[in-house]
Image (cartoon, rainbow over all chains, first blue to last red; front, top):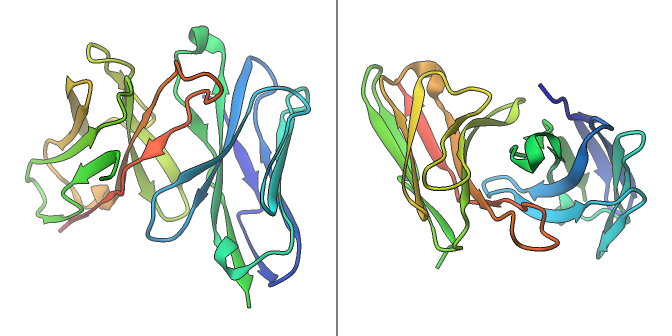
Length: 115
Length: 116
């Protein structure tokens, strides 16, 4: 069973603070690493898909980096705003079985931004 | 209109009843999934289907069954509902063939199920 770990489980930050959290995944048979944003009472929505070691993706104040050799990805939020409050999920896809495997999700990091 | 729809959105049922949750998509994706979400446990995969003739068990398939009636439809059944199946259920779709997406998943709005 593949293990995808996210830390911290939850955090509270003040409005305007920058923050980051971690996703750890197996470093072998890597295919892709996804980040999703999941607001309360809504459905998860895709933020980034990263496929190459060293990939960096950015969307507004949110960015992500990828290290496939050591098996981790960081998600950064610059100048957090209350609307950034959500659970951030990462998901890993392996090349095992010729890629015919589903995404494996971490349990998420729940971010609360206090105004 | 939403690309991925789920019906019903909310359901209350009694222990022992058989219920079906339905998922439809207009995205034209081959791959469909059912997840459940429980507080503190994230998303757990119940079943998935990579095309109409393909059904696979996920992490927590016991007590559930599925039917892939067409490319656009994927139903989840609870044969005999029990209280610990109370959860929020999500359907999702993906398409391996879209370059650059690497199977980005698109989620339905969720079905909130309460088993008494």
